[in-house]
Amino acid sequence: MTTASKITLVRIAMIPFFFAAMLMDFKNHEIVSLVIFAVASLTDGVDGYIARHYNQVSNFGKFVDPLADKLLVTAAMLIFVEWGRMPSWALMVVLAREFAVTGLRLIAVENGRVIAAAMSGKIKTFATMICIMIMIFDVPPLWDTVCVWVILVTTVVSGVEYFVKNRDVLDMKK
Image (cartoon, rainbow, N blue to C red; front, side, top):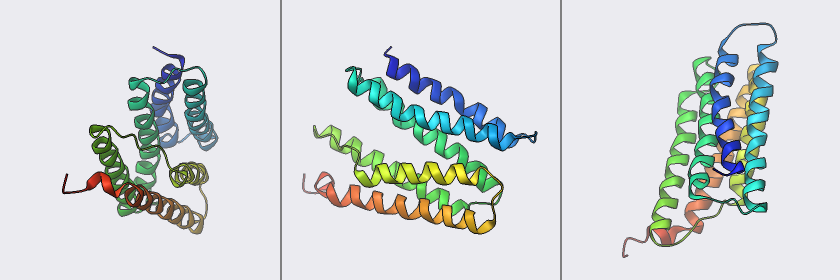
């Protein structure tokens, strides 16, 4: 197993600790949650850099890395929904986009094509991570609303971009 894949697995292993820190009521649990989330988020860039720089790109990594990201983000958003700080329909939009883009990529791979991450997808990921880090704290409701809308807009825009740029993948005539 490559170093990059090990780092990705560490990110996955951090998710239950993040979840527990968020749900437990102890002094400074928000700080602990933020540190765990921030470190887990940063490992995404680290494992990607290592994989590319040291030629450690693997099928396992291609599968597990995006899965780790989705699990981490979904864990946070599930908690926000439970706390009433994010509407469940907003989480559904995020999940629907993730499933749809993953499906598009699977169809593309079947046709021998790889759909690389678009800049809008990277912006979405960055904005989502920042918004989650803000929402970890007990912020005023307006901040929650702004963060949810930033997440939603970047999610929808990036999802639409993936489908517009790669609409030929879904050509029904093929």
